[in-house]
Image 1 (cartoon, helix red, strand yellow):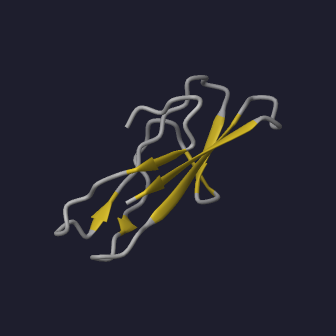
Image 2: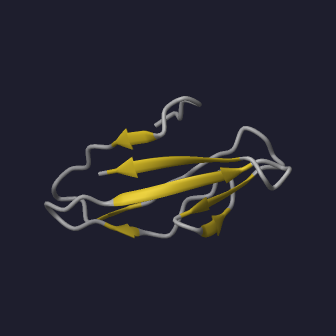
Length: 79
């Protein structure tokens, strides 16, 4: 998925047989930081495995914080 600045929620289709996935988020600014569900991550590096339960909705939130430490944008992914 390529994030759009004005879109905050994304629905992702995952094959029923898929039991886990990873998210690789990349910031546009090298000084910005990111977190997946509150856990700090590194831009361009895959997350730890995210366990998917068949038939259930999984929600993950990517938060990007600007270099000033104040401005934040959240993106919600639902599968």
